Length: 223
Image (cartoon, rainbow, N blue to C red):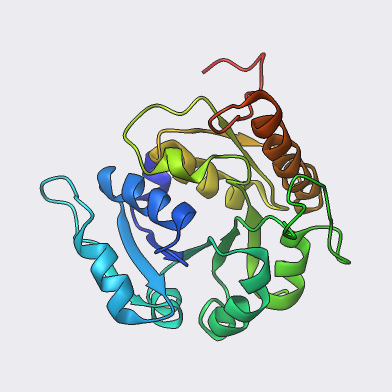
């Protein structure tokens, strides 16, 4: 599955945040071509310089979100719901014809353990509407604890991937596997609402059972 990624340049938009930096760290360690995107190039470059890569793999680069999106073939959007619209507007001119993997969960503080869906019914559908039909949007990584991605430990969590085209989902599944997670094809983009809503449920479970990042595991599928 990793061969799917051999010609791709992956930009992690919002890559200095918890989720983005954890994903970037794991993808860099897997030898993938990674660009960190942030609001300021200096911050992105500082993060990039701290990420180790295998011998012979390209060094991680740091750029503004817009420049990272322009240089990439695949952009992973790892920003909070409150910033999604602004960041998507910033990168939209640079992702036409490209694949965007949206990881946004519509959490509305302070009641983040309560499901609060947007008018579009999901953050992924909102992303598709904002970016337009010329951009291929899939979604995933909603239910993975960001602080666990920052470690080298195995994570007992599957990644549900949603998108209307199986070939686009396959790229996101390959990215999940490069990050040492199991990616699962979970159907069209409209189904993303299920995983987005489940994040609030997992937050509540974490609190009630004092769990350090409960995850999701699909049974019955051979590894």
